[in-house]
Length: 138
Image (cartoon, rainbow, N blue to C red; front, top):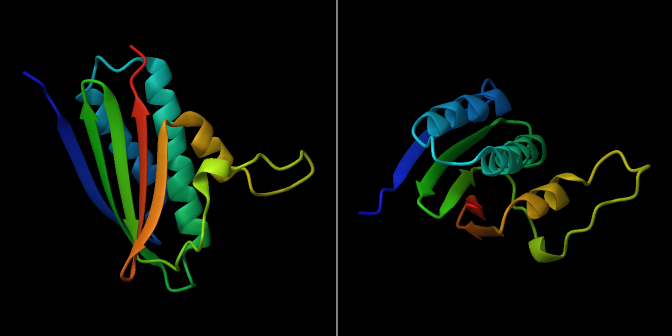
């Protein structure tokens, strides 16, 4: 029997921030003792980076509402983050490059891309939809 667990939360920033996402992930990991540390660290880092980018860049100054779903299957971890923020534009998430060492920003998307196996963005109506997936290495 294949066991799949799903965790959901809604957040609004402010007052919620990436700490809220990290708190959810603590609950997720408590239900998934079989997930190896490298998978936990990689996925959580990518998800927190994604949430930080959404909070920082999609907010037009009025705050932002998000819905987050994390699903753990026997062979992968998936997350979908939906937000009410500004459109993400025409992002090519498959061709992200790390900026040079002197740049003060622009590392978020390449870091996410490096830590997950799938990374997608689209806009449905007035909602941004971000999806990340990591195949379990164990």
